[in-house]
Amino acid sequence: MVMVETLRSQLDEKDKEIEENREQIARLENARTAAEEINASLQETASSLSEQLNRVAAEKDELISVKNRAEEEVAEMTAKLNEIYQQLEESKNIRAPSNSGEVEQLKEDTEKLKQKIHEMESNHQRTVADITAMYENQSQFVEILTKKVEQFKQEKAEWITERRRCGAYLELDKMTLFHVKRNDIFKKQLHFLHGRSGSYESQIEVLKNEIAATTVVASNQSSFSQAQVDDLAYQLADLTKFKEGQSQPVNSLTMDVQHLESEKAEWTMEKGRYSSWFFVAIAVCLTDPRVTI
Image 1: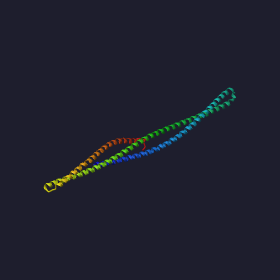
Image 2: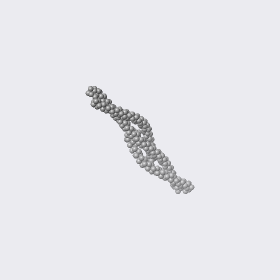
Image 3: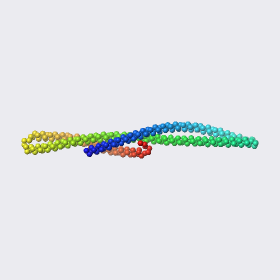
């Protein structure tokens, strides 16, 4: 009875472990759903970012075109300025001092042109700096997003591996439950046969006592029937033979139970190794901030 109660207690523990594994699988299913939602969100973000990059590239091309036009205008203005300087130098050599007012006007126009050229160059430099900063920021964002996507793929692969491992543990627990139940059935059969064997032994003892009493009575009463004594002896022989015939199934069941106990011990050692590794993996996943359950 103690062994049967122990097996029942172990069976309850196995049921609890199976229930915990099912809860773990449910949590992993929820994590997979969340991961799929994150994956969809990342794909949408990547698509939006791709569109933004395309727009930035188009704006960059347009700004490059504007830059080229500005450089052309600066070159034209520089050429005009050089031409004005040349005309001014020529006018200095040709015109009389009475034309000093016109020279001053040309100098003023030249200074205005210089200021305008300087403003255009400053605006051009600011535009180029803004485009460069925008492009660098977009490149950094794309790089960060790419790293997050790769990290998510790795975590998803680890989650798939962990789910398969949990499925293997669940199948192992199912096999254990089957063996424990079968062992319980064998225990009950063995207990029943032991009970019957005890009953036969008690009957044999009763018959022995009856034979002894009959022998005493026969020794005291010569008229006692010898046929009845022989019949009781035959019954005793039959019961003894039946007991010997029943001892073989009992021994066979005992060997089966011992074999199952050996298999159970081996399985317990194997499961202990897998469980220790499994709980270490779960602890790592729970302490890793990258994993969300």
